[in-house]
Amino acid sequence: MAENCNHNCSSCSSNCADRDPKSLLEPQNEYSNIKKVIGVVSGKGGVGKSLVTSLLAASMRNRGANTAVLDADITGPCIPKAFGLKDRVVGDENIMYPVVSAAGTKVISMNLMLPDESTPVLWRGPVIGGVIKQFWNQVAWGDVDYMFVDMPPGTGDVALTVFQSLPVDGIIVVTSPNELVGMIVEKAVRMADMMNIPVVGLVENMSYFECPNCSEKHYIFGESKVAAMADQYNIDAVAQLPIDPRVPAAYDNGEIENVEFEALDTILAKIESL
Image 1 (tube, rainbow, N blue to C red):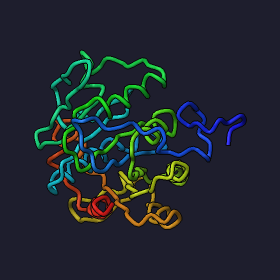
Image 2: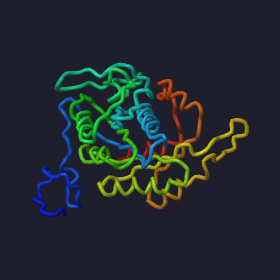
Image 3: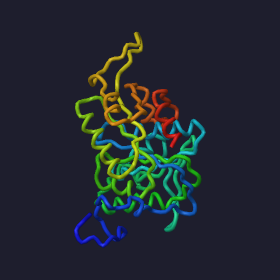
Image 4: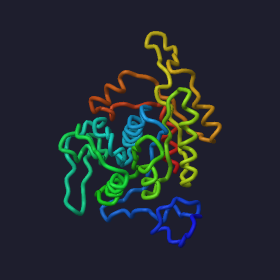
């Protein structure tokens, strides 16, 4: 407990152990009915977190669920490109409407609000945190079975804003097969534990390359450590995604909804069981 605590969490910015994580939750608006919120996180950048977010949302949509993506990576948003979205967000001073993909996934992202997608966002943490809250409570999401929140890398202001302001039901940790994997996973798991949020699954991206001629698996970035990490932190839903040139091509062409990985089935089943 912080010194001179007045026991009023709503007026305090400290993140002490006695804080009720639900005390800062932003309410849903009357135009939204979101049932489950899943955060997709990583301890570092460049591991394919946005790719995994897009694949999860598209795969759950293919299973018949109403899905949405809240792109919380305000300064580096790339979700719209994966879904081939070009339309701008519309609305007024009270409510905004998400842009809907070809298959029906609803998306809100800073890149859908800028005059040009290459325009940089030069904002400090508090402003970014305010935008994320607006993405939650000032967007008419409608009925959503699963909302996936694409987080920026690390455990800074944005992660804290999402975990304190949104009713996150669980997180998916994304990593890659290299020597940093232990540190990446541990940071994410400890962050989730501090916020009392369960780790739903662990995805190792770029896990291996399968030769198209002989089907032999080549571990280009080193042998996988994901199984050992999952055992260490009692994570029972694990996926290993291969290096497949067709996947980045589909992402770049806005056709991520045409890609499916059976390797994600365990993760998807775990999400459905929440």
